[in-house]
Length: 313
Length: 179
Image 1 (cartoon, chains in turn blue, cyan):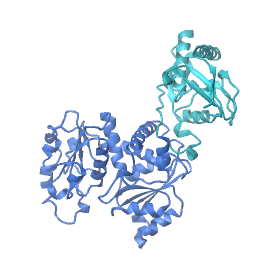
Image 2 (cartoon, chains in turn purple, orange):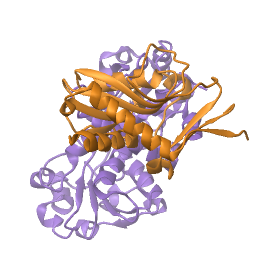
Image 3 (cartoon, rainbow over the protein chains, first blue to last red):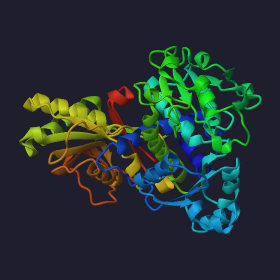
C-alpha cells in the first residue's frame, strides 16, 4: 500500500478513474475510522494541522460544500469557502484568474464545483496544488460516488454482484456517471432507468442495462438510487411536465413493492418530494439518504487526508 | 541478510508478562479502576494477555481495548498518508480511570506521544501509565515507562522484531542488525 499512497501525492481527484480499486478500498477503510471520529465528543484529529483548503463553488450547494468544510475542520485544516456570488467573479474576473489568485495564496487543495465539464481539470493544470472535483456539469462527482459506495458497502458488506438501479435524469447527472464507474469497478450490475429523452446517447456503452420502466428497474434490486430532475440544466422540454414525469418515474411505496425486502434507497440530494421520490419512501425504513450525508463528511475527510496528508514528492 | 539475535523466547514472553501483571496489581491496588489500552498492532494482544493475567491474580475483570494512532503521528508530512488505519475500540468510560497504554517496543517515544494525544481526545483519564514488553532506548521525547518487560541495549540502526502468536503465529522477540 505504501507505494500507492506515495504515488498519489500531489495528484488530483477529478474522476473515479483517477483512483485504483486498492486506493478506493483504502479510502473506505479510512473513512470508517473518520466516521468514528465524527461520533466522538471531540470530533477532531490533528492530522492536517497547518494545511489550507479552499472551496470554490460556481454552483449552489448545501451538502458538498458544507461536508468538505466540516471534513477539513475535523482534520484541523483551515478551510475557506468562496462562493462566486459574493466574490470578484461578479465583477467579471475569469475562472482562470480566480484560480490563479487563489493558488497564489498557497492553499494545499482547492475543491472546485463548476457548471462546465472539465473546469476542475483545467484548474488542476494551472493551480500547482491538489484539485478536487466537487462536481463539474454533467461530467463527474467523484466524492459523491465514493460516499455512495461507502453507504452500500456498510449495509451490504460489499458491492460485488449487487444489482443497482439508477433512476431519473441520467442525461444531466454527474452523480450517475461517477457512480456507474465506481460500481462497475467493484463488480456491481447497474441498470439505468429514465424516459428516452433523459438518457445520454450510447449510455449502453458504459456497460449498464437500460430500461424505461421504473417497475422493471426496481424489481429484484439490492439498491435503488433516485436522481433529481435537473431543470436548471434543461434547455428545452424533454418531458411534458413534472407531473407527468412523476406519474411514470416517481419512486412510490407501490413501485417499491417489487424490490427486494432488504432494498436500500439512496438519493444524492437535494430531493424533490413527490417528483422523483414519494415523501413516505424518502422518510421510510429503506431510505439511506441521511446516512449518505453522514458518510459524505467521513469520505471527504479520507479524500483530503489522502491528497493533503504528506509533502509533495 | 544479517543474523537475528533472540532477546525473548516464547516461554520468556509468558513469564515476563506474568511479572508485569503482578507489578501492575502492586502499583494499582484497586484494579477496578484500570483500563488496559493496546496500541495497534501488537500492543492489542499484549493488553488482552495482561488483562487475562490480572484476572488470574486478582479475580478482577480489567477492561481492555485498542488504540490507533495513525491520525496523530508526527511524521505524516514526511511519510505521507496511510490508508490502513486500525480501529480505536475502547468500550468503556475512561474518565477518571487509570489508563495503561501497552505497546510491544518503546523506542523514540514518538508513538507514545501520539497515543497520549489520541487518548486525550477520547476522554480525561485520571492518570496514564505505560507498559512495554521491550525498551530499546534512544528516546527523543521525555517519556518513561512504568512497566518494562525487558531492557535491551541496541544500536540505533538495529531493528527489534516482536512476534506474537495472535498476529504472527508465534511468540518471539529478536534484534536484527543493521535492519
